Image 1 (cartoon, rainbow, N blue to C red):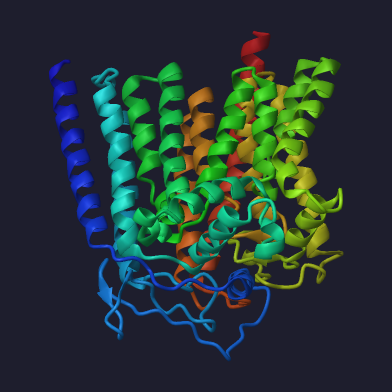
Image 2 (spheres, rainbow, N blue to C red):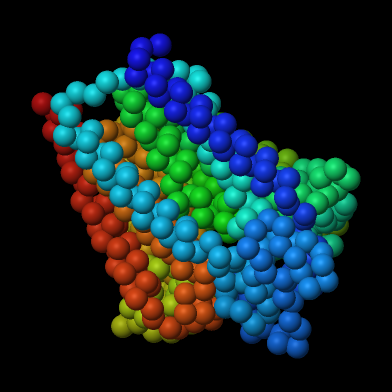
Length: 527
């Protein structure tokens, strides 16, 4: 090891040890959460979170609040901070512990200032010292990110969505094949396998008090694995120092942290599948990509937004056998995932499930800070007319336009290296200009922008990753902490205006960057 590498290793190892000790202390003071909603209550809570139905004010489910992992309720029992979880709160804010709203906001400001500062230093220097490749540094960094998240879980408490996942994990562990009949869930089946494992572990005597914490472990692990994948890919195409910086930038990104650790959502796991699917395309393993894409679609329907990238690659390869092979691979993968849940059901049950899920959001925007929210259409009926067409029709027009443009970029780029860029165009363009979007649907953009930068080495993609990270964080943060009571809300706070405008500008900038990249590529190839 050179001197710089030794110093860096010492610093990250010290950070790792501190994070590990913090996690042990935090978990040792954790006494568990006593409250578990019934299946009926959980189903209603899910509807309220999504802004579908008015709350039933005849019941008020409040959990005691506190300031640390071992806060006391009125009965003397210890519970994790779990603030104001009542049926009449705004969507998003239900169960969110507001004690940590301000520290999270301050951390976010500091993170983005530090990111801009570090990038500025690297840009100014004509050369920078390489710290090489050190497994000690890499695993210490990843371990620090993991244990900081684990340490934070007991303090930030659980959002009511975590109670939904907890209930579903319990049902999956006890009634796996009959999950949908017992749970009333409309969640697609792939993640139920993960919840089954969590439910089995959480049912063990030694882990029962940690059940609510275990729910957050899969997306937290997905954060770490995605960061590792970005590092490994960056090592192939970029300087080692930059590989570390990209991994750190993603792992400690507040937009990523707030989703998995504070909210307890599973978008990190979904994003890992999307990143893997795109990487498989770039590694020329399209059948593996088809398997992963199928799993992603059967986890979250919005994976269909990015699915055209696989189609683009098949067209680029110009071999008919691959079309049949991919179709058979996807069908077989879907059958394996669906079969355990299919006994006694209609052959079209998964289509009915998807239709039901999609039909729950008949709005121009569902707290997504995008073009429709910018023009004041948040929670407006998607069948309402805007100029000549309904919001829903405009959304379909924008989806087609976005897909045509990303296809054009892929064709003109004439390389699998444009897969990540095309995927970024798909997810950001559809989120920003389509109807019925949720606040978290843009989440994969932060990782995809970094992935596109690794392959194409255009600094503008770094700027876009930073910009999308800011907008993702702001949208998630303000919905999570109930900005102006967001449930079924047509209010128009400044945060909605600013973030919606930012997303529109980012997509316009992305279009310009993508077009310039393929134009430059065409000139180089014809020169």
